[in-house]
Structure formats: C-alpha cells, structure tokens
Image 1 (spheres, each protein chain N blue to C red):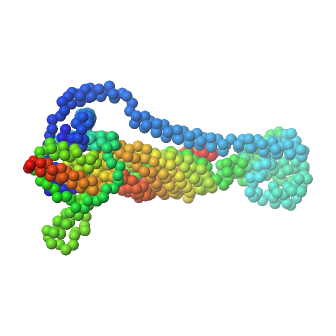
Image 2: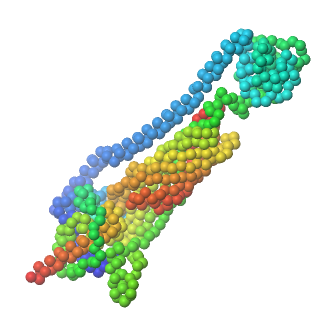
Length: 443
Length: 151
C-alpha cells in the first residue's frame, strides 16, 4: 500500500505520538487481572452453544442408528412368521388330501421342490405320467393330483436332488432303492430309514448359501440397506501468495501524476502492485467426519443420505514492509449429503462401486485469532457442493465392511467475502475411509 | 492512549478499551512472536487498535450505508507540520466514526482497502471513498486551525 506524501506525513506525525495513560488505569488493570482466575470457572456462553451443537449432532447420529436398527429388524422379523404361516397354510391342505400324521417330513420335502430349477435326468418312475417325469412340480397336474400322497412323497424322497435344504428331516430321506426296480412303492413312514446317500452329498443338492431360498431373501430385486461411519480429508492443502493492489482512487492519482510528469499521452491502465506488501494464505486440508444411511433402490443402485461435519482451517499472513500480521481462521460446517451409489462389481467379500451426489453445508461456528487476539468473524453463507467417487469395500464379516473411497468434489462460489478452502480450491480430491454395516446380510 | 483516542475520542470509553487491551496483552503474551526490534510495540498497538474497532462495532457506531459517492480527486491538503500532535489527534477524533476508522486503519495500520472493507462489512470502493472524504474533512480542519493561528 503506497501512501502519498501527505498521508505519510500524517502517519509520521502521529505514529510515535504518545499520551499519558489516565490516572488509575494500571490499578484497574491489576484488579481486573486479579479477578481473571475467579471468572475462569464460569462457563462461557460460547461453550454452551458448542455443547448444544454437538448434542444436536449426537441426536442426529442416535436417530440414524436407531432408525437403522429398526429398519434391520423390520426386514428380518417377518421371516420366521412367514415360514410358520406357509407351513400352517399348506399342512392342513395336504393333510386334507390324506397326508398321514407322520408325513410332515415329506411335506417339507415337497415344499422345497419349488426351489429346484431343472432336475437331472432320472429313470422313468412307474406309476407317474410323462408330464410328471419331465416336470416334477408342474407335472403334478391332473395326474399327480390323482396320485396318493404316499406316491408323491416317495417321488420326492426317491430323488435326493430335490432335498434342497438342511432342514429336511433325516427320517424323510428314502432308502435309496433304485427307482423302477420294484413294483411296490414303499410308503412314507416317520421312522428313520438308513440313508445310503446323504442329501448333502447328492448331485442335486444346493447349499443354502449358494442358492438362497426366495423365502429367505428380504427382496430379490434390491440390495441391502447400509449404515456407514467415515472420516475424510482433502488430499492437498492450498497455499497462495498475492501482491497487494494500490487503492483504485490512489492508482488513478498516480496515473495522472505519471502522465503529467512524463508527458505520456495515455494513462497507464495496468493495476499497480505495492512493493513490500504481500498477502499469503495457507488453507489446511479439510477434515470431515460423517454418518450415512443407504437405502437400496434396486439390486445395484442405492440412495444415500447422511450428515457430515467438516473443519476448515486457514492461516493468513499480511506483510506490510517491516510489519507482519498473522491470522488463524477456523470454520466449522455441518452438511447434509445426498447421493446415489451404483455397484459395479462384486466377488465374494469384495465389491467396487461408483457414487455421485450433492451436499449442502451450513457454517455453524467461526473462530478468528489475529496476532493472539480473538476477533469476531461473520458466518459463511450456505455452501453447495457436488461430488463423485469410486470405492472399494471388503466385508470383514457379512455384517461389517471396510471401505476406501477416493473422490472429486466441486464447490461453487457462494458469494460470501469469507476466504476459505472451498473458494481457493473449488475442485479438490478427497479420500474417504470408513466402516459400513450391511443390514440384511447376516447369513 | 494516543492510538485509542484516534479511534474513540471519548476519554472514558478509551480508558475501557485500553483496560481490555492490556488484559488481553497480559493474558495472551505467550502468543507473541518476536520478529525484531519494535515488534512488541507494534503488536501492542495492533491489539489496541483491534480492540478499539471491536468496541466501535459492538456499540454499532459504524454507518450502515453500503455505498458513498466516489471522490475521484484528492483534496488540496495543507501542510500539517505546524499542527501539534495532540491537536491533530483531536481533529481525527472529530471525524465521523466510519471516516475515523478507515483513516486510522489505512494511514496508521497501513491496511489495504480490501481488508478494511472485509472488517467493516462494506465494499472496497466504499472504503476508498470514505478515506478520501475523511481526508478532505481533516484537511479542512487543519486549514481552519492554521488560519486561526495566523490571526
């Protein structure tokens, strides 16, 4: 900042000017300092406000966790009752068809037939129609319905590949006698019969983990909801250094003087930088902590909503020839992110995904210290942002996954005067690391 | 005291500002970084001026106008060599609060208008305009003072 002669004269005249302090000032200062420790224990209003904000954040987190727990239970509770209801509904109807009391195991086996996709080729079964041979389930149309239950039970028990679940009682396993080699069909009895071939080892056996029963899936068209806890920071900090422009009016005067002195025909339109003056700023890497809840829309696509806290710290240094003024600025933001997450690839416990979204930040607290003195700083305006990322997750256990997610964010200028990381580096890379609880994946 | 009076002409109020400033100086002396001769004096001066500006803001002495007509031509300033510092300080104290604050920050703290504008919540061009108005008013007072001294 170059000052003209008159301004400099004024500065020099009063810069070193001193006046005696008012009488009694030092005594008052000493008295005030003596009271300082006594006043210290009193809680400051700002601390109350900070505590209240943290309490609000904790409440949101508790609400999200509670909601997630309820959601999880909601998805799982109907399962046992559904299974019971299914059996209760089907059992009487089958018993009405003449099912013996001891034939429950056979009925269960019959029910599990619905899970078979294509039975392996089997020898023709005597006493059953052609349709029944080709389609074990559908084939029990007119022909099958006319057959006694014992025969149908036998049909199921004679084909171990139809035993699709480990819940099938052992007493329903047939003795494995070759089909079609006997004219008589052994009736189903509740007595345990020695099984020559275990259903677990049979060719058509499907393990419940590899082929999930439709009745055990929460939804065949959707993935599972997740709850994520994460920490994130920017990959780079931002440093810059600017010259200081001469005030516009002073620059005009300077240009006029320059033009008059040197007989220039045109005034210098260039901005005038002041020598010995400089402004340096250092924006530290942003640090964020967040909580997200993800709701599946389809098997691969999910909607994510959450809450995020971000801290932006900056140092400003203003150099005015021999003088240096240092400022430390800290801004605290709370944001609401919303986005979509698309699963690209999954294999065993690994999965890769891409996500994109937007978020709104509110500046909840500011802190400015100039040369050790705390000053007021107005809050920033609401800040919008958009982000995109790719991520990789590994499920440590089916219920809990660890993920890492590099991303790119853009923060448009919100028009405020506050200088911060978002303004000086609107595009920035970030790295997010966190834990994700996978609801509905407890198998 | 002289620094405080440049911002706040009322002596009782300056006393409060000085007291607050020195309490802050004593309680935050650990944050002072020695940068050579005169740096402590400069640091103390900045604390007093910052506290004075905060005081003015707290008591809402700043004008709320966002724009002031531009003053393209600087006034024809008289020589201030013959004006005693006490009188000059009093003259600055008679300026309206906004004018006085901008003039002090620009001339004595050597802040650029961009920073002054940020501090006072006004436009940079407004800070520049206020400074020229303050300068013209101060020049008028100096001329009147010098004229009275001649007679």
